[in-house]
Length: 250
Image (tube, rainbow, N blue to C red):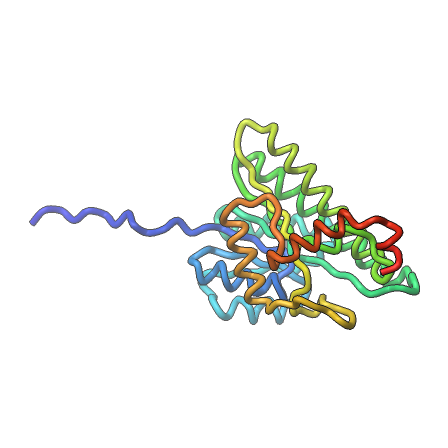
């Protein structure tokens, strides 16, 4: 009997880290990537919710508890996840917060700034440097259509998302000058049915599962910028072109 050939058809298990996966888009993405046979590391502040996510796919999902506003601890926990996964191919930043704040209460603005700017920058820098050393990788962030213009109702949130959009453009420029390929994807959702969707009269709200599928598809296609759902791309164009004297009265 001739010797049997080794089975080389097993797919490589992609190693994915998702920052901010206790609920909403982050959790749904973690489950989606696990279903697609990836090894997934997740972070968040609420350990019980992280454990519940891991229970769906205990052999594929692991977690570390951390708050992105604690920058040193976050890096330590991310490095631990990399060791647990045996590497990292893709990092998605889903951690974010924001409140309606027309009264300009700074107590509401500060957590948004610490999470969406300080925490985001720390994680993005760490991931990009890791991929530089590895000479490959993919960094994705969930920003927002809200980052296209300012908001009197949620000034810190929209401004922080504008920061993320601009920062990701800077990283794309930096990656373009490298002799190897690092992909970056800026996902700009409109309204998704999560706890982050606040306010009255929301329109075009899509289920979180649908949003996650569109996000995963955009990342797999290596898109630089993607809107979720796609119709928000046209809203963004209108927002960019809308004269200020009209926008201010909206």
